Length: 248
Image (tube, rainbow, N blue to C red; front, side, top):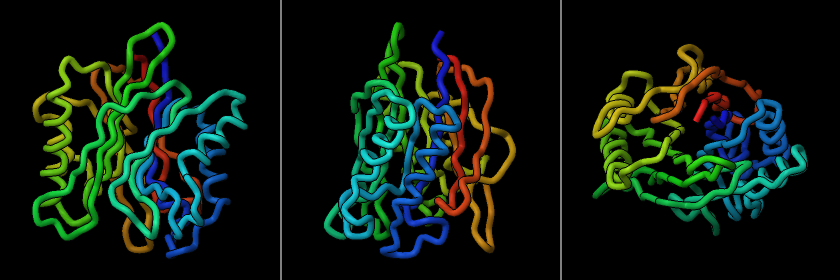
């Protein structure tokens, strides 16, 4: 039975905890790669990823992180990116990094009719593990503008996955922008088919001067969690890395 460590991380475009515009630092990405390696992760689900835009100095951030992980592990790493919208001559969205081969299954826009706030996207892929069938993995980043936005986004994700039955074992992770027990959390956990929360029961994953909370989560179906944790990577991002180890 394969055992994997999977993490989710909102990397804030590599701009650090304060997120200053046009202040991307390669140092932040290097710190992230080091934390991912030291945590022994096999798959990482990323949000707030910049690709080849002015703000990130034209870097392809998922590919850069994959290359850094290859240098640490002496093994091939794979990456996928899903654009939420164009930004400053390039893109902004979600990404997946994997130590195993990846195949994109679905890129789903979460834009709602008449929406005037930042658009979101859901990326779902298959990871191919030696001696086992595919593992479904997905990365989401729900709206910061309240449950009236987040619940329809969560409904859209569950509806899209519901059309893919029979589903393989799967792990979803991302920035919910809401707490455990919120309406969007319940939508992901229960509607259409149940998902189990996989991450640690305690600890904050987002820190700001006036607000700290747990808003980054991992959910699964057909997997068995054993250990989990939250890693504070200092100034690299205003979100912490949330991870879980699972038997698939």
